[in-house]
Length: 200
Image 1 (tube, rainbow, N blue to C red):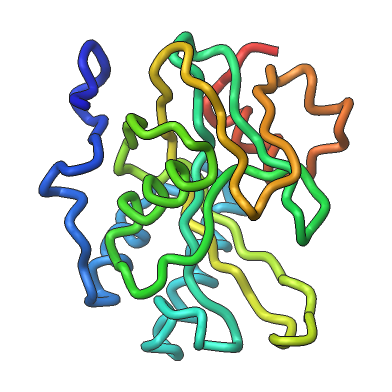
Image 2: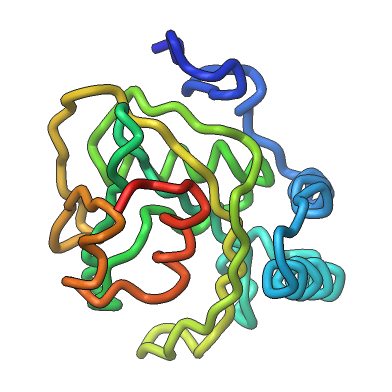
């Protein structure tokens, strides 16, 4: 699907600008170009760049100290709501996204994860990051505690598409900003809603 009627910056699956890339430098260029809106975001930007300078395998989850991830707030076609999932392993309401698995084209990775986790096939991504985050993932039997260095994007959904749960989620739900308090969404999720100025 072309992103008809949307900003020309929005890209759909199949666009050559979303082709897979393997070189870490491609991802780092996008992160360096991010214009941090506040000191917290600037600190995350420095942290992610410093980590990647020390870990050339940061695109891969086999980098056990931590790795790059890509996620997105999927915004409804009318711009009023954002889609969150109740994550099965973490038990929290989060934006959709996950591991990039070697793909340095971070908006493409975010779009791929969003399609897989929402069941909406014809999403469109703005390739400019809107937010950065670095957070610890608790240790589990199969992996130690580690960093997720998350680069976040805006993805736009077409109108009236059915949602399909993935194995990663217990629920999918559209939220207006004012509804986040009812599920105790964490600060980084609220920040995404604020970043996109969704109505509350």
